[in-house]
Image 1 (spheres, rainbow, N blue to C red):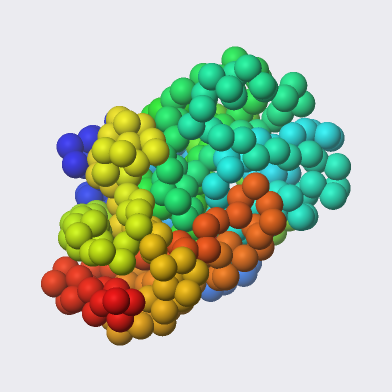
Image 2 (tube, rainbow, N blue to C red):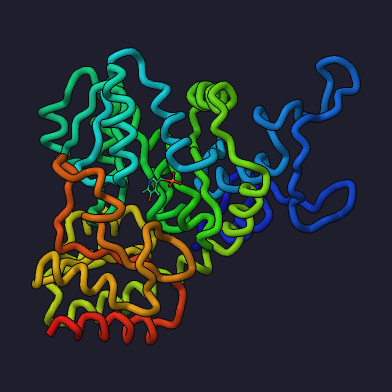
Length: 387
Ligand SMILES: *Cc1c(COP(=O)(O)O)cnc(C)c1O
């Protein structure tokens, strides 16, 4: 990728390894130290080196916040204990009675947080088709404060035109939150397309190794950042220093991993398209995919997530999900190892009966960075069991 950062003049890969991660000034350590201290000495009352108490600020967390903010082309970065803790911090911006407009395909936990935790407290929500911008404009609920979108969505991988949604939202005085977990900043930088806040589950591609739970917010607006940072400290959903270190370590190889995730996903898509048991393949690169045009416009490549439906319905989906050897049957996504799951009964079970319910013949793949040949053979063998 050729984009250069305004501040450093460095490309993405260089920033991933160096921003916020200068060698430690006291020892020269090349790797950012894990700062476990919860409190920091003051030379006189109120005079310190920028840290007082680790909930309010921690050196390892600051390194992570600077690095991922830079990757998102953001002025401000805030790290959290989980993606949902980051999301909850954003929802605390809602004024009394403020509405959240949610795309009608979203991570089940996001839906649960908005519909089951915040809504009963007096914050209405509705699910809308964010690919239909004309209808969004025409049917805009006047109490909307936040438009919450994922692109590509989980698990249908629909892509939404961030700039088009942002234009409608901003004209109506709302802010746009983009969950960039699936794309990562390597493939898509939503703030450059008009988003106000980027949300991440760092548990996924940023961490990249299925060994840390984390969340992140990135944004440019100074006053919003001040409010979010206030709540980060006041409500306290912060990550442990060791978790910050693990995410930082993951981010160093994000570019390399994403390239392999994307090329492996393409190989898997080709296999699925040619298999008679498969009904539909959902991948943003396919020209007939909903939002392909939006993806082509705002993404550098199409990502490592692939979903598909089976002609044999739910039974076929459950059979394939338990029949692979390299693809492990498990929730989560975005790490080096390939995973397979049944969204209807696993990640999206909490959306059953809601507008966000997913088809029960759907299987979702998180395509890892193993050899493409082995992944394709593994899937082929599982699909062949259906015939
Ligand atoms: C996993 C996930 C989340 C939630 O993040 P946690 O780290 O599990 O709290 C939010 N959005 C998307 C798209 C996710 O995949």
